[in-house]
Length: 265
Ligand code: NAD
Ligand code: 0WE
Image (cartoon, rainbow, N blue to C red; front, top):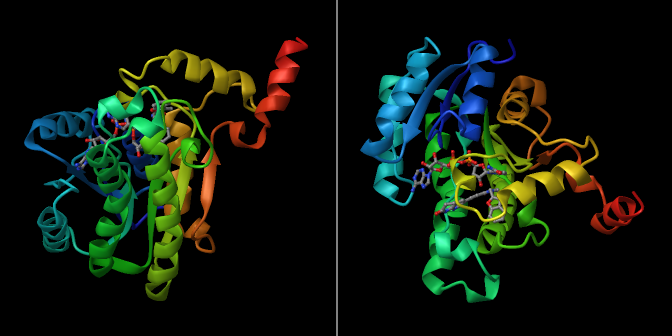
């Protein structure tokens, strides 16, 4: 029960497959008290019924991260209705569908701005507003993907957004360290979530990562959830500005080496 007595805000739950939902379940298992945010009225019901399905109850707050007032309002309401929180989970990303196809060089100015705004700047905006609503010793965790470090075909502008997100986390770790708040990132392997829907060849992505990873398998949201729960707990009190890969070891295997080995049978 490494999160007993801790209160946290989970963003980014869309459905039962969401990585944020896996994180929420891990945090509950470790004794945390949670509240959730949803981006629009349309998604409120689905988050509500997931929580009910777990036999839990939790306060829900609307927050669209593209609007500063919406973010300020979120933390004002949390402080009033929940009190100070100990951790924040950021599990939000969005790029226009047409930018996750074809080549990165075709990204429009508007598509670039949208992806970077929702997928990267939102961590800074949420963190900035969260500070006043957080206890010292608090922690923030966000989700990235290896496409922010290396070229993954078609991940395109999302890769650029993840690079910005990962670097933002380091600068935030430095700034918020003054308040005793830690900021870390979990880089997850590919998982079939709503955000994977409609991505051409996602099956191929899954089989490549399965074949090339050190553990020769894919990861699930419970594994990402357990790592995120650890990172926001006091067990990780000495860790900040860190990028932790929860990808069955895919990141540490050389692509060309794995390819040669596959060819050799
Ligand atoms: P998901 O679709 O379940 O979650 C994405 C969430 O972003 C949704 O809940 C959506 O409502 C939210 N969102 C989008 N625009 C928003 C806005 N303007 N305001 C507030 N919320 C908004 O998919 P997921 O795969 O669980 O994604 C969660 C995070 O994990 C993302 O950052 C994603 O990049 C990252 N990730 C996913 C994978 C994967 O393969 N699925 C791998 C590594 C990292
Ligand atoms: O971060 C992601 C996906 C993020 C995402 C997904 C969508 C799909 C629907 C952001 N915006 C949108 N916009 C939509 O309209 N992942 C890590 C999953 C993912 O997405 C890919 C991948 C992987 C893995 C896209 C191309 C190639 C690989």
